Structure formats: C-alpha cells, structure tokens
Amino acid sequence: MTRPRRATRVGALTVALGLGLTAVPGITDAGASASVIPAATGLAAPAILSATQDDCVASTRIAETPPALDALQSAAAWELTRGAGVTVAVVDSGVAANPHLDASVVPGVNLVPDGTDGGGRTDLYGHGTVIAGQIAAQIIPKSGVQGLAPEAKILPVRVYAGKTDRQIQDGFGPSTARMAEGIRVAADRGAQIINVSMSTPAEDAGLAAAVTYAKERGSLVIASAGNRDTSDAVGDDDKDGIRYPAGFPGVVGVAATGTSGTVTNASIHGSHVRLSAPGQTIASAWPAGGDCAVADGDPATSYAAAYVSAAAALVAAAHPDETPAQWAYRLEATAVRAQPDTRSNISGWGVVQPYDAIVLVPGSGLRGPASPFPGATATPKPTGTPEAVSVVVGPGPDAAAITTATGIGLGALVLLGAIGALSVFVSRRRDDTAPRRPSPTGRGLYRDDATP
Image (cartoon, rainbow, N blue to C red):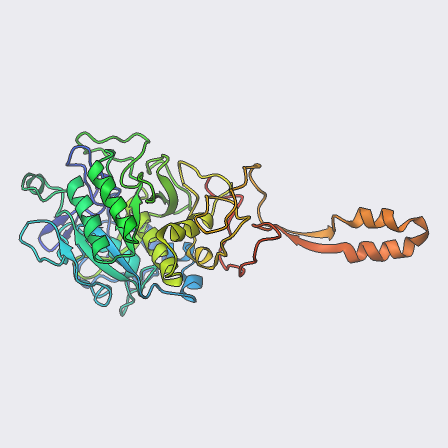
C-alpha cells in the first residue's frame, strides 16, 4: 500500500487510511493517502472533491451521493438487483460498527491474535471499514453515502491490525500467510465474492494455493493491482509488474481511475490488470461511526477493487447459477474501452459497468476476452480501434445496387427506391447472428474517449 500523506484520528488512535503494508518487506497494499471531510450539512457536491484535513467522528455525515456511483451505472443496475443473496468477504483490517453497515455485516473471523473480538468487528486502521462501506453501505438519515451493492452481506475477515512498528514487531501487521488464510476462511464461509485490497510482488505458493482453493469452492477473488507510491516502504518495488494475488489465474486485478475517469500512473501497470474502477474521492463508512471522504490525492487501487467487488456482487445476484469465471467474463466483456478486442496493461479490459454486465447475452460474436460460456467462438482478431457509436442518416449501402438493377427506363422507381433505402444505421457491438440484448442506459461497450 502507499504511504498516507495525512492521518486522521479515531478516538485516541492514529488511523492512516489507505492501508499501508509497506512496513513489511515485500508486501504492499493498494491504498492511498487519506483526507477527511467534516459533517457535510449544507455543503455542495464539490466539497467532497476539495475536502481538507479534519477528523471524521460518529456524527460526521456526507450529504452527497458518492460520485463513483453515477459512473458505475448504479441507478440502472438497481432496477434489476441490489445484491441480495450474495456475501462479499472483506479480507482486510476488520469492519467496525457503523450505522451504514448494521444490517449488512454477518459474523466474521479475526485471524490476528491481538486480543480483540473474534468476529472481525475491530478496525484499528480504518481501511476495511471503508472498503465494506463502498460495497454495501445502506442509507442512513442525513447521509448520502451508499454502497454499490447495498443489499449484499459483508463477511469481515480480519488479517492484520495495522502497520506501526509495534504492531509489526508483535506479529499483528500484514503478512502473506495470513492473507492466504483469510482467503481460505472466506471461501469456507461461503462468500461468493472475496475482496482482497492488498498486494505483494512475491509469487507466494501458499497464496496461490489459497486462490485455487477459493475458486474450487465457487468464490471469485478480486484484488487490487497495487499503487506506485511506496515512499515509506522497506524493500517494496514501485516498478510496473505483476502483483499478487491479482496475478494468479482467475483473480480479477483492478486498477484505479481518477476523477477524470482514466487510469493514472499512480496504479501499478502489468498483465495482472483485468479491470479498472473509480479509486479517488471516495465517500464511505468510517470506523468512528460516521462518514468520511478519502483518497483526495492519487487514485487508490484498493478502493477501485472494492467497487469491482460490489459490481461482481450485483452480477452474482442476477445470475446465481453461473460460475465465478462467467461473472468475471461479464464484467470484463462489457467494460468501457476504446479497443474492444484488446486488454491493456494500464486499465485491463476497461472501466467496469455493472448494468451492462448484468444484461449481457453471452454467445458467439462478442468482442473482447475469451468466453467461458458453452458454445462461444474464438475472440475476433483486432482490426483497429472502432469508431464511436454513432447514428448516420443517409443512403443505405444497397442504394447503388438498386439504381443499377432498375435501369435508366425506370427512373421514377429508382428515385423511390433510393428514398426507401434512406435509413438510420447504428454501430453494433455484435455480429448480426448473435442474440440481441436490452439497450443499456450506460455508456455502452466501447467509446472513442475511453482509457486505452
């Protein structure tokens, strides 16, 4: 994880939001610097974007809806599902009590032997509570904070207490072994989606085995791609390259977009990146019991991973009979990107779009990642970046043929035929033989201004 540029207090504790795993050699987390915003009564929406450092307390409320929800097709997706019936495990620093989460959190597990509660409801660091709020926070009075899958359940799996020198020395800091154990526990507890907003450059065998174990039990693991900022790291690598568990087969690695909607250089780039999502100016639940706005600096892939986990929960709720690989395919095939046939080491298959993923009709002819659905054909070869979806009014492609066939002596009929051939042509995402899907209310599969 990256170094927090600012820290906030929860009671008498110093909490650095944007979890840092940098105190352990070889381990990084995908969090970022934190700043907070006081009670937002009377503040306009831009106040979240320009938040200044302050303390978030139990009474803090942010009246505005999290900006990311609009970019993530929340309104359209919620017409179909809000995530009911799906459990998302948050393998992190714990999930503290918060009114946004009172109805969402199920009994969890604490793998840290620091004497706190056994259900994972202690969060001394703040990170896990924010992640849980992004996924499943429910509306409370005077607050606009809400998760992308507000009817999903959160399973807290606490795998570290924090990253202070004392916590590391006592064995309560982040570790690859406990991360792996957390993934296994989450799978055993029946979580369909497992959010791991942590990363390491080490291709650890135990971690790989835990991911395989989860896949075999029907869980989809979603992990952060890693952040560039490791300024306080000991032995960390800020260069592009694969991070784990995101780099293991079947795991969805997530990069972070900024407020512009594009992935920045703050995210680690590499072949492990499969999707991207908003990771900046995040409004969510806070361990003190109120709301908080975080990541006003660089986008953070830990928060981006949380939104992809929530999107996966919506897809899983809408398609409970499908496999984790099929859920992941839906998310990747429908992500917004400029080149439909090609994934990028920067943004993966593009920015996740939950509604489009839910209504996708799998089958032959779809461009993008290889499909795990039966009967799918091979992915077409790239033919260059497609044009933006557009509407053209003019003579159809058969107008000239009609003119030639009718002959000079049938001029009047030719004129009528040409008029009849005038039509509206809309760029299509699929072959003509493929089944049609409902028209989405989002931005569509491909855009000329999408992140490459």
